[in-house]
Structures are given as C-alpha cells and as structure tokens.
Length: 499
Ligand code: UN1
Image (cartoon, rainbow, N blue to C red; front, side, top):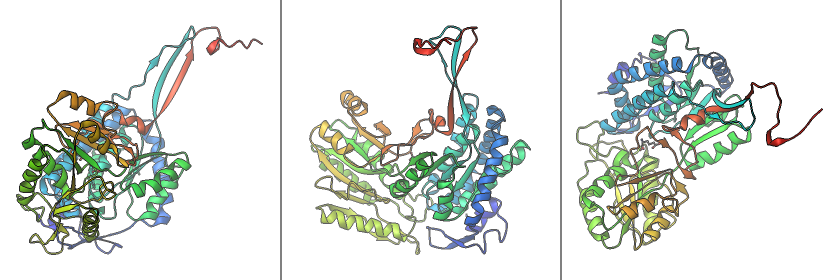
C-alpha cells in the first residue's frame, strides 16, 4: 500500500498530518510522510490534570466493565490489523509479516487483559489472632505514563495500556519521535472502541502526547503520574528511573539487551541456524531481544559458522513491503553509522568481520545494511555494548560453566537461550547457577516472546516486568486489611497494653 492509502484507511483526513512541527520520514526510502503537530510542553499540566480527572471516574467502574473496553479495543485492532501493520512497516521499516505480527501481539495482550479483568485476585491470609481475618486487595494507582521506542512502536504501548486500563489507570502515551503516526493511529482505533463502549469511558482516559525530551520530562517528574513505564536505551533509563524514584513514583523500565545463545555440542544445528538467523537479523537486529552474541562449543564452531555464513549470504535485503524481503532498513542513517563504528571497533579488538556493509538494496534513501557475523577472540568491550543493528558476535567455549559465565558477563540481562539436547545442560542453564536474564529459553532463540509470560530483564535492562503472568501487579497498589470480628482486642506478637 502507498503512504496516502495506508493513512486514509486508518481514518486520517487530508491536512490532518500536514503543517505540524515534527517531520516524519519513512525509513524505507527517506520520503517525507507527514508533519505532525507537537504537544506544547505548557499543555502537559492540563494533560496530566485530565488524566487525574479521568482516574476518579475510571477507578470506580468494576474491573470486568473496564475489561469490556479492552475487549472492544481488541476487536477494533483485529479490524484494522492490515492497515496498522502496514503503517508499522511504513514508519518503522519492519517487513510486512513483522508489522502484522506486532499488531497480533496487541490483539493477544487485549485478550489476556480481558480475562485478567475478572482475575485481579488478592489473597486471604490466616491471622494469628482469634476472631480476625486478613486479606489483601489490589487497587488502581492513577495515571500511567508510557514512553515507547521506535522498534515496537505499537505493541509495547498495548502491553502497558491494556493492563493499566483493566487495572483502573488512565494512560498518557509518549511515543518515540520517530514513530508518532502509529501512535496517532492507535489513538483513533482506541477512540472507536470508546465510542462503542459508551459514556462510562471518561474523557482523557488515553491521551497521546507528541514531542521530545521536555514532554517526557513532564511525565517523569509529575507526582500526579504514579506509574511511569519506559522502554528504550539504558542511557535513557538511567535518567528516567532515578527521577521517578526520587519523587516516590513507580518506574517500570525495559532497557537494553545483549542477548546470547549458547550452542552446545549436542545441538540440532539445522534448527539452531534457523533460530539464529531469525533472532539476529529479523527486524534488522533492532529488537531489544535480538540475538547479539553466539557462544559456541569449540568442537562445532567451524561447522556452525560455515552454515551461518552460507545462510547470511542469501538473505533478501530490501523494501520491507516487497514479498520475500527478510531484512528491511535500519531506522535511520545514525543507526547505520553506529553499526559501522561498532564493526570498526570490533576489528580493532581482533574481530574478523563477515558482511556488515551498507547497501542500497534497490531502494535509494533508506539505511540498508548487510547483516554482520563477527568472529571474536573474546568478549571485548564492543561485544559487551548493545548496538541496535544486525551484528552477531561469535565466541567459543570449552565447558558449560565457562559458557554460562560468558553469557552472564555483560551489563545487560534481558534474554538468553541454549541449544542443546542434553537435559543436564538445559536444566543447569535454567537453574539458579545458570542464565541471569529475565528470559531464558531452551532450543528457541531469545526473541519473539509470547505475551503470556512476564517480559523484562535484570541488571541494566532495568528490572521491570510488563505483559503477561502477574506483571499486572506493577500497575496496582496492594492493600493489606485486618478485620476484627470478635469482641476482644488482642495485639499481635502477644504484646500486652492494658489500660
Ligand atoms: C522490544 O524489542 O522492545 O520478544 C520488544 C520479542 C517481542 C517484543 C520485543 N515480543 O521479541
């Protein structure tokens, strides 16, 4: 689909995306797609006040009723899947199947959140005092700020928004400046769900704010935004996290990854090669879960590298809209330059680089690159640094303990995996002495997680959890209640305090 077609299919009208101060270019060919109006930073105070007013109404609706809005959102997303996927392709450069897959991830989290809206369970707890009952209840918190990155421009919002909304919290979303259109399209889709839902949805329940650091700063520093979920670089999280904590807000951080795969001697190499290629070069290496380090047993390293080099040699790079393309463009020229700089640095550290060149791929104007395989003599400084591009560093190991140490010896802790048919190795990798990451897989790659599990990681990845499992608890406050239904007033711990 052409730009104009995609935008009008999503309900944008002529001139709606003209004349604003934020220029949007498609990474596919550098063409100007829109000029989006930015939110004046002076408006942020009103945005936050609107969100607080929405909170006072939204929190008293029963959670299953709140879930109904998210159910309708899921329906609207199903109806708009092709168009929104196409806009993700246009604005973020993902291949068509990955654009659609990202929207499917949104639909999945909506389904999950609808079920969750009837399962915001607390505990009952045995009291040590006679005639007493203890329990805990989960309550809404207030406005939830969501700051997202360009690489999953819509799914990450939906993980946060679907949970926040069923948990009783309004949402204020600041998308990446590189991908405002997909956010505005989601707002339109959300508004369609709201109009079907009816008047129970307060005005300002989900707001999108467009702009740069000053807009983000308003969310980060406002005491009226108790939850701030931010996805992006470790550098960004290092600024945002302490500021939110300093005002006693709750940060949910999902930052850098430097994800590894250990390939053991017993591994099914054909399967490993497929998993490696998808996770290292899919999304042009721009997932936070992308595979960046390969730790291969020395007995199979040559064989695996030969197979990989062969697979890398025939990868279709080009226009992400074209059928058969597997690698689209990087988001911009700065990313391509950062990739080239990382490869130069790896060379200076003794790395042997295969591929990695900038290519035109038949589409002038985009930052296209051939993915790089880099044979490294060890885990150097460059290998320990996340570069958001398709670079795969290959290292060898002799025993599993050494492999696990290498896997863990980086500042980041998002995702990890092992390919092995040896049950002892697999279970060791998943044990307390194994991977130190938030995600640890066996015989699948580190990327492409389903929404049912909690998503996030340790160390410089920030420690936050989003999406499935009980990540919803991060969006609510827990209240412990003790009720005395006796006619006595015994104190806990046997304390006597008789008047
Ligand atoms: C991200 O790159 O920020 O596991 C999120 C995955 C996707 C989400 C990635 N489900 O690769």
